[in-house]
Amino acid sequence: MRGGPGDAIALHAGYPDRELLPQRLLRSALARAARSDAALTRPPAAGLPELQSWFASEVGGSTPVGVTPPAAGDVLVLPGSQSGLSSIFRALVMTGQPLLMESPTYWGAILAAAQAGVQVVPVPSGPEGPDPDELARAFEETGARVFYAQPNFANPTGARWSGAVTHQVLDVIRTYGAFLVEDDWAHDFAIDSDPRPLVALDDTGHVVYLRSLTKSVSPSVRVAAVIARGPAKQRISADLSASSMYVSGLLQAAALDVVTQPGWQTHLRTLRHQLRARRDLLVTSLREHAPQAHITSVPTGGLNLWVGLPDATDLHELVRDCEAAGVLIAPGNEWFPAEPAGPFMRLNYSGPNPGAFPAGAQRIGLALARQV
Ligand SMILES: Cc1ncc(COP(=O)(O)O)c(C=O)c1O
Image (cartoon, rainbow, N blue to C red; front, side, top):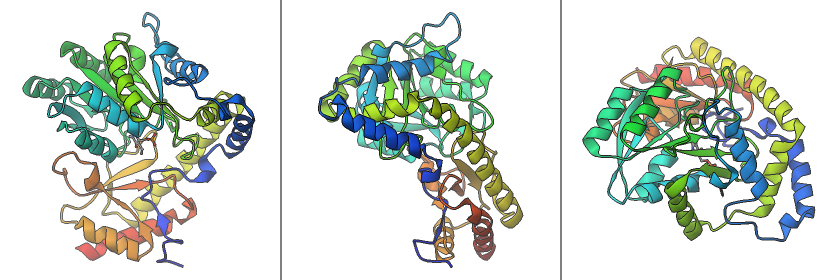
């Protein structure tokens, strides 16, 4: 069977399939939240204090000796991190001013920056992260004061910054008196290596940190948080008051319940195995059936493979041909804040029906073969 939207092999999506969600924990948590006061009361604007504490303690767990971990009061709970991106860009970058962004990067961040009316300046980034000298040059030449980045399991590339790059980038950020907006969207999707949030290394307020539970708890329990200190936090908080005001207490209570159950850690361990098996199956399938496609590097976490394609590839035609053959893929050009560095596609290995990955790769291989 192929062709209809219902039976297509979906490698284009951004969200994990429900079999990867903590379904049992979540349903019990929602039932408990429905019976609690949270169902009837307005939570504080910054979030439920226990949830603020949990987000802070998650960072505190990776904070080295000698660095002060963030406090619960540094946390603002958000209705998803997408709205956090918009608020942060509006609060920290004046209209028309430059904002440095890794390239390629998350299309939603590019969109939020455009909507905030800021001028995006791309900084090329590879499997080990951006070149710190190039980043310093970009700060110097543009006068920018903010850099948006995903140091762990970036969307779309899966890149994780090396330890050396991490420290050098922090030095550059401090030298220029700038902010690093760290988007830790895939914190719960580690596979071969654990995430190392940069914010854990900084107690000077130069890192503004975003952590989302949307994809790991449930897309329907849209809860995230920003951690920021000092005046930056005040400015972001003021922007959030004007946009979302506060986040549903019911959803916050349910999210907190899920992540504080002992079963959550068990779930994350199982998820790690499931993601590894899915990632490896898609990698092997592509290598076997679509040798024209080049996996830039096998990600050690996250949900996606970033795949380079032959230079002459017509992406639009490839997407259309794949769709006609019953495979949905995401064209890579959406993830570039400026001119794409070449033709790429993003394939998500967390969608439904991983058993169909070999068939999907085969059809992609055939569609690519038709291009030359
Ligand atoms: C890198 C990145 N940041 C932020 C978001 C938005 O997350 P949320 O669903 O919490 O708004 C996404 C969603 O795809 C993402 O990939």
